[in-house]
Length: 294
Image (cartoon, rainbow, N blue to C red; front, top):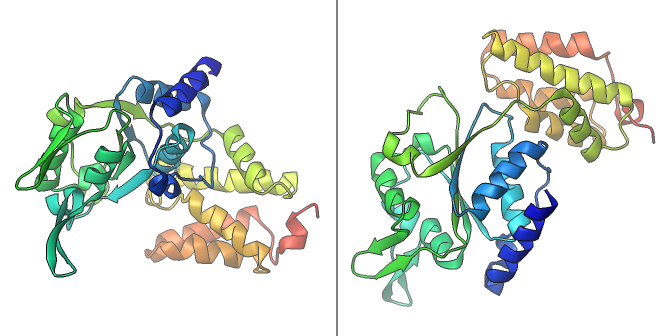
């Protein structure tokens, strides 16, 4: 791992960034937990590969992408694919400025020009038109030809980090031509010990018993989702952390979890199951002073 970090420093020294884009270097709220996956991703970036992160919700795909941009000191552009994202959304389009028609660059053009990391979130929701734009920047050509404007040769520090879930509504399988342009990392479910460490890192004053209870509650959610008793979207680790932030402001524990977790589920049966899990794990009327060592 030490040698990898030395190579990261060499990379950063070799490819300094424009000062105007320094504010695009992310400062991740969460550190990615999982040394093996992190080492694989770092090695892929150093080798000049684009990365496809594949896994269920709450496996840390976007967290890993942010951590990579931070470690390499690269500006990051995040593109969330949906039905309205087309070629002009990615590479740019005409716009008016002071009465003149100019070309407004899109996130793919900017990342390609200035050596950024472009995160292609939920790439398997992209339309064919958007996919076509990606082919030439992801393969050996590493270029974007914008008719009537210019030819962009992709900066040697630019990397494309795509994420995808399987089986969600609106998604589809990627074709082999696109898959061949990525190094593919399958994101594992966070281990119980890593989850406890993550909770303790971000909420160091929590009592150990509550750290364990929260980790076990998330495990309960994942087990229910694996057994198809609740949807895959229900185990929302970000929601749990958001709930813990609300508790700091004086809100009761279960009410915080309802706002940030339970109320995101619009199926009454699923919501009741999650409520039952909360009741089974935690007593009534828990406040900040009850769960911390302060």
